[in-house]
Amino acid sequence: MSVRIRADLEGIPGYVPGRTIPGAIKLASNESGVGPLPSVAKALESAGELINRYPDNNATSLTGKLAAKFGVDPRNVVVGCGSVMLCQELIQAVCTAEQRVAFGWRSFEAYPLLARTIGAEPVMVPNTASHALDLRSLAEAINADAESVGLVFVCTPNNPTGTTLGADEIEEFVAAVPSHVTVVLDEAYREFAVDGSPDGTRFLTDAHGNPRDNVVVLRTFSKAYGLAGLRVGYAIGHPRLLDAVRAVHVPFTVNSLALAAAEASLDAEAELAERVADVVAERGRVIDELRAAGIEVVDSQANFVWLPLGDDTPRFDEFMTERKVIVRAFAADGARVTISTPADNDAFLSAAREWAAAER
Ligand code: PMP
Image (cartoon, rainbow, N blue to C red):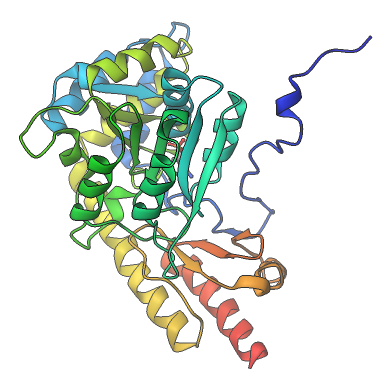
C-alpha cells in the first residue's frame, strides 16, 4: 500500500524560482535592487513587538488605506499573501475542476501551474510576433468554447516580455468575452509603466459607468515597493467576486510584518516614486546600450527587459552565469533580465557586450 496522490498532479514540476548563487548578481526575479525605505524599516521594528498575536485576518487598516488610495469602498479590495496567492484564490473562487484557465503565452510562469493544481486545463494563446499579448486571438480561443472557461489572466505590463496593452484593446477584449468569465488584469509591474497605457481599474466599470463583476485588478508590494520577501499583494474588484475570494482565503496568510510594511509604504509614495523613476531611467539606459551592442531587446514598461534569443537562450544563460550574473532563461524563447542598481546593470551590460562580441 502506498499513499494515493491525485493522478492529475503527475508531471507538474512545481514553481521553479530564480536561482541564487553566492557572490553573483541576481537579476532573475524582478526584485527591487535596493532595501526597504527607512520608514518601512522602522514600521517593521514596532510591528515585531506584536508577533505573539495573530495578524488581522481582514487586513482592515491596509484595506482601508488602499480603498482610499483608489477611491473605492473597502469591500472592493482584498489583501493577499502575495498577488500569486490571489491568482490561486481567484481560480479557486470561480473555476470548477472541469473548467479551463486562459492566458497568453509567454506570460507569468505560475499561471499554468496554478490552473493545474485545481485540475483546470490551461488554454495558452501565443503572443504576437512583437512579443505582445494577442488579445483578439485570446478572445477567439475563449469564445470557441466559452462555457468551459472560468477565468483569463491578462498581464500588463506582461511578464516576461514587458509589453503593455492599449485601452481600446482591453475594452474590446472585456466586451468580447462572456460575462461569466473572470478577467484578471495582472498589474504586478504597473508602477513602472510610463507609456500612457491605461490603469486597469478603469475597466472595473463599463462604458456607462456600471460596475463589472467579472473584472479584477491585481497589484503587489513585491516589485516597485520592494517588499518581495514579505509577501503582500491586493486585488481591486467587485464585492461579489471578492467575497468569494475572501471565502476561500487561507486564514492569517498575510502576516503582521507584511501588513505594517505595506501600510508604511503607502505613506511614503513620494520616496517610492523616486525609486521607480530611477528604475525607469536605468531601463532606458540598459535598452539603449544593449541595442548599441547589437543585441535585440523588446521595449519594456516593467522593471525588466526581454531578450528574444531563441535557441541561443541556454548558451546565453550559461555565459552570464559564468560571469556571475543570474538572469532568467526561458527554454528556447529568451532571457528576462531585471533592471537593478546602476552598478548591477553595468555588470550585466559588460557581460552582454562580451557576449555580443563573441557572437560576431
Ligand atoms: N504576477 C506577475 C505578473 C508576476 O510577475 C509576479 C511575480 N513574479 C506575481 C504576479 C506575483 O508576485 P507576488 O506574489 O510577489 O505579489
